[in-house]
Image (cartoon, rainbow over all chains, first blue to last red; front, side, top):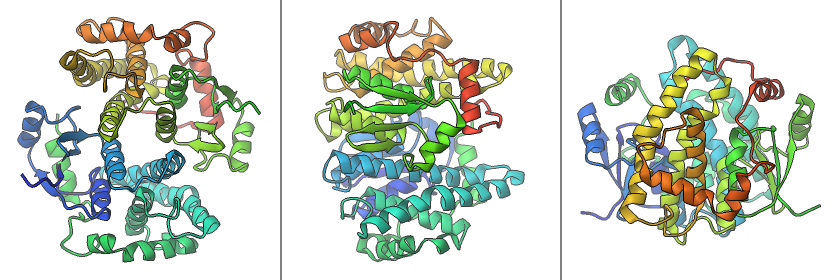
Length: 222
Length: 229
């Protein structure tokens, strides 16, 4: 047993990707187990590994953690990426939850029916441009610091960086009206742990493709 | 200015109800401003109070907090309902995540068509009895303590009681296979702050009705159909 956190999920982004980002940003090495068949998943449930019969599952510090937010809060708390006090944590939580709402749209996108894809893409672009990115642009402009909260690298910065790249994959010019976010993106990309995560061969997963969608539907088929 | 937290939402449960429960459980008095018109909502947005243009919003400790989960976490930590260390917090977060998913199925219930409501009711009961309640039943049985985490009253207990009562509103005998949860419900309901919240005249909101649905749709301009799970 290596003592490293062990992640169980499909071999793709989904709900596990923000967790991979956060561990990587914290410089924490981790192992991964990939679900490829329904039998594997059913066995995990039968063996009592999944508290609510769902993945993501992260085995960390002797716990079998489920529920994405719970896992991320624990990692952020453990690796000092959660601010210095309750108020900074409140800000980080607000920002992370907002970004998570945007990421939810991207998460569901590959599963939308073909005739809804264009509309959903427009929604992602609209929300990113009108609701979410302006908030973080303004936060960075107002305090002029490198990081979103408390002049220190936190979970919120990692989550925003992930979201920016994910939206750019769908809408390449999305940052054109956001000069602060462009600078932020560059700064984050140059942070050693993030830079490493962005290189080929890292645990970062590629955008979901048809094979990923097919695997999800197969593994979680009722 | 009273110094009490102030809640901005519709006059109904929705996403704000868990926040009302937690503040009440902590013995914290709060004020409420109810959204009744589109104009009120737009005024809040234009005034910059809603960073993602959404409610719930809670003014607390000089902050205009949004995002239900962020608000609940802040309240839990501030009033010592979040466990004693990182591992207890992790357990509380996991348990609350489960009850949150369960209550999420009920959140959209009032907005469904009559036909979908029947389907959704069955879905809610099925998930409650096969996925969620068994987990908490086992947790309580295994450690034999009064509270879910760390032998201490926490956010997880408040959230579970809220979820139990909401599912019971959909099927009154839903706890019949869960003796631990029945005892838990009785115990937690008799905690003085919670007992008070469960009495008529408290700030607890009733089961959402057509008027509530109409208000939400009108204020949010949310006229699209909501689908069942």
